[in-house]
Length: 237
Ligand code: ADP
Ligand code: MG
Image (cartoon, rainbow, N blue to C red; front, side, top):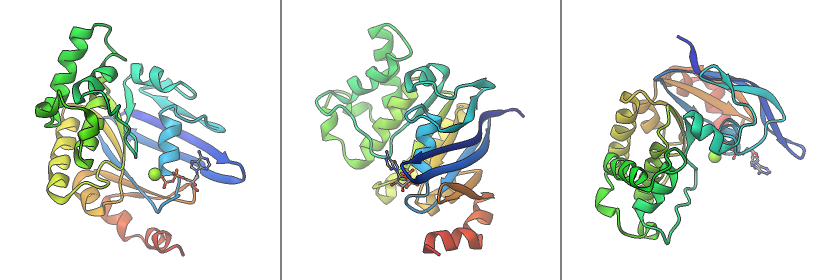
């Protein structure tokens, strides 16, 4: 099957630091691909390069067979590629619903339609009851789900999630795994950066480990987390 996302030899440095060094990977349609690696490995930078939040120094990105290298985030969202942030930043003075409507309006012109889509997505992530309260009131877990609702409201065919389980308490981890599996079963391809290895094992089909800007291992979650190179990377060896 053709890859939904193809990343070819993508690199990016900051000053003298090679944050992402010639990374190549493919994500298949309908797949859930996990990315692990110690802090500073280049995971978020890679996502930002794919999602148009940072410019690549070199390399190419193709989404659904179309070159998208260098496209801005809004253009990518219109192509069906969306991303959530490691640190989500809802507009605190706006309500949950309004936050999701802003995202929906990237894809649909009318307020009424955006409102309907936003309500549906709040429902999907289990936040419909919070629709009319300020987003500043969100707990950490709710903020993660709000961020997912905002991404879903752009009607993506692929979603990049940067540490969706970060700061989420244990019962919410289960709910979030169920939610992401439901998202995938709607045909949305997922790429997930995550530190919570237990959640990773339960969620992903395939795992990639990064270290010092490079992909060091790729395979099943069991293979990758047991690989000596991955263990050493986490130990800083
Ligand atoms: P990860 O998400 O795997 O923890 P990052 O992609 O955030 O890693 O960071 C990779 C490296 O690039 C780190 O050393 C980080 O300090 C550096 N870095 C990331 N973003 C910037 C930036 N905007 N300016 C300078 N250095 C950056
Ligand atoms: Mg990161």
